[in-house]
Image (cartoon, rainbow, N blue to C red):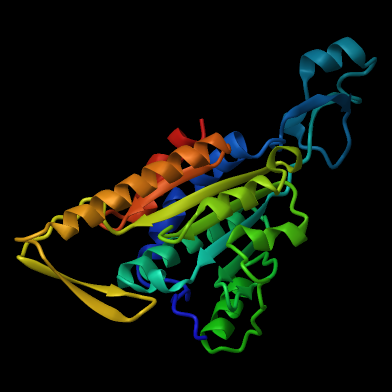
Length: 297
């Protein structure tokens, strides 16, 4: 099986656009999704030469120290918590068409990868397929992750064989995750109930795991401009021609997709999971930036 998703780093001005939203997205991750944010106040203690002078508390030093000018006291804070960020990319046949799904998936992967690297947190990408999956392992730098993607593109990465009837999030159980942000990127055209159950079995509240599902929606805002439209069945490789003047199959397909995304949104909410629909007619980075803070409250 050849991986169909082009995950090489985007070129042009896209990396700059991604970096502009990293701060707001990652702040949301720390403040809304992952507990134990660094720099939380811990208490007071005597000043050390390695301390930041800005942390000296003059009023406390005057009250506690016998020589406040020579032996000041400082405010101490809890250490920054390391967050593990793992992205699971669906590479099943439906993700191959239209091509914009692949382009949007690439942008979303790099959004969360660069967000992690900017904050010295490890990032991991798993490209999931029921037959063969590819795992980058933990990466701590943009350079290391780029090397994996180049090797993946040239088919120099050994795939893993998922267990029979495995699903996207079933691969996470053996990893024993903790303090982790999980991102799933898919069009969710295949049955998704099993994926939701796999997330639940991760014991997310106890292990401090949070999940964000990015659903690539090819029907949101779609309005046909001609009398007919051609669809391809990715599994059977069969073309279907719909006549919009007769039976309105396109409208039914669009309504079916809308109902599916609404059902996924409700199911995700009941499992304390964020589901972000990403229409293919809107910029994916802007959609995440706009939706993320509101979804995480």
